[in-house]
Length: 268
Image (cartoon, rainbow, N blue to C red; front, side):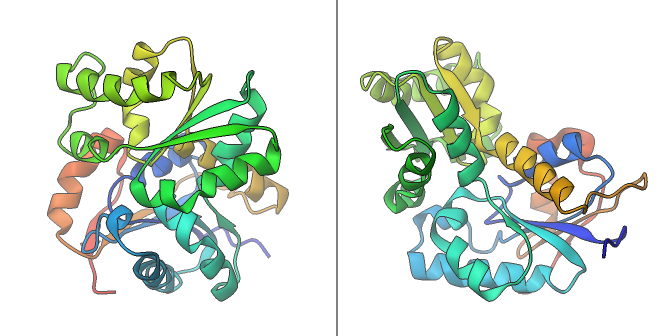
């Protein structure tokens, strides 16, 4: 039975998942949102699979203290490594970032050659490879770990005319262009802030934001289950495991003045 006061729970290792939240705000402005950023343990992309699964379970256990009608894994690393564990342990609709972006890439590629820009953990998991081939068995996937991009974004360096951004992106994109890809997936939730810069450097390629794809998948899933909130107005609550003020300040990079709620530090 639908409860208009229920929340969509969104979690990430830190702040990057706010790009997913931002897309949710735009597509479903009336939905109540609880966001948890595990900032005490970021980044997940450099941790072992065992540790990532443990952190993810702790994150969702915390979110279940609230009336959650759906869960969004707003972290490509957690989605790639911990998705099956979360589905086994928690009985609620779970949405991720990898499958929606993979499905979109498999659909729009013309030559079947798809590039993935992601963290090392996501690349090593080969989650995008498996998921893209689920929808396009003949696709060829070229994954590239891009460790310099998250620090750039978190330091406010993502504008397309920033010379440092152009230099770093050009080096990464050149590697993928050598493989004759026609589609690129931004497989980290920090990377959508670089989408405009990427498009300016490779205007001939299709670029897919995993955050935008995830939000659209979530909306479709809630519609199918009759779970979309119909009353106007929304509640937004944010929790972090370390330094709420630092999170609040950096959130402006990701959502500007759309935060719309207080940030509280909690122990998980």
